[in-house]
Image (tube, rainbow, N blue to C red; front, side, top):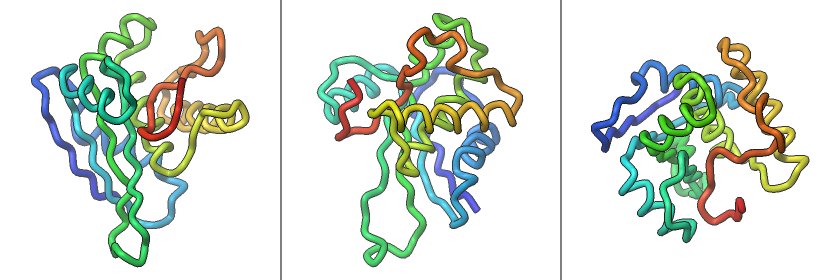
Length: 166
């Protein structure tokens, strides 16, 4: 069971809660336990402020992942963490990358969920494992390979504060 708290802090158009739930459930399906998470949809000002605060980068990025780091013995809820998604950045990237907007949203949400589960893409081997899982999950939803046109094959799409992705 997924407990999803969707916070909308922007006037920009975004997918429905049902779409977010579907994408999260797909990204988290390897987790047998219940899950609780928050997705906060923000504008560029808040996205930039959070990216600056947590990653010391002075621009809004598409997705920030904040895994919950609470010891199990202190908290008896299945808290995974939070995703902060900058809606205008996602829309702009979809156009720039020639991707369908819903496919890009699905990719970023699944990617962020995998970060909450502990996946990363800092090392090449980790990136290959994470990208293969993303491709598989997105294909099951009928979406194309998000890395098909990526010349380098390893373009991080979300960032986890406290970890160096550059």
